[in-house]
Amino acid sequence: MQVGNIYIPDTSVFLDGSLKEAILRGGNIKGRLLIHTEIIRKFEGEARSGGALGWLGIRELNYIMDSINKLGLEDVRVEYVSILPKSIPRPDQHSVDEIVRELARELGAILVTSDEMNFEISRAMGIETLFIGQHKDKLEIERFFDNDTMSVHLKEGSIPYAKKGRPGSWQLVPLGNEPLSREYLERMVRELISASLMANSNTRVEIRRENSLIIQHGEYRIVIALPPPFLMGLR
Image 1 (cartoon, rainbow, N blue to C red):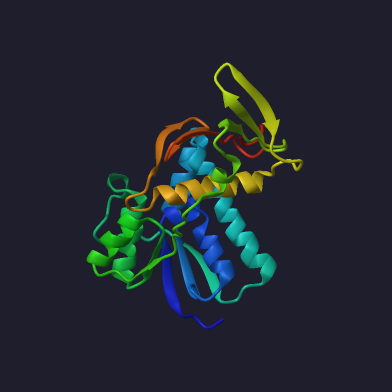
Image 2: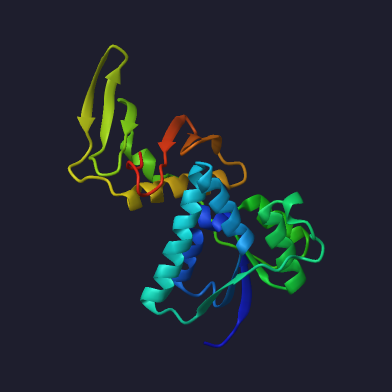
């Protein structure tokens, strides 16, 4: 492989799955992909303390490595680095995204992000930045709702159900015949996280609890149970 540009991703592209998609599409990222070990440390720390996003980040790291290896992709070379920017001698006093942003600036590398705020800050600092977030007018979860839907219940390994009607007069209605996979539900969660990273978004992560998230997306309040992969299913 010819070594081209140097790319340094921040945490956002692992949480919303956009880095994996960009690599598989090809074209945008060709060269050395430097993943800072502080990102791994952050995800591991969150996962060990029950943080739902930590598990998402770790699983995405594995998806990326598996995809590159199985497909034999030669345009991207993943390297794990621990070097700290000269301007940040104490990493415990800075966020991980600050560290990778400063490292990209000092190395003259391309910062890869799907966080619009980080994108604008990096541009203001003169850092070459590749934004790979995706603006979507309608998210996947919205297709389960109509005017008669009170709530929707989605669980890994089960078919989707909706509570339809009105308070005091409702019924639980199946919305399909196919059980939902963990991959599909994780993709839906990543889509919500991606939307929350956009400027002027009506989506935000409101509460982070042990193995769960509460996300407000417009008029929808979404409670997500995200246990470790080897425990009960995602819902």
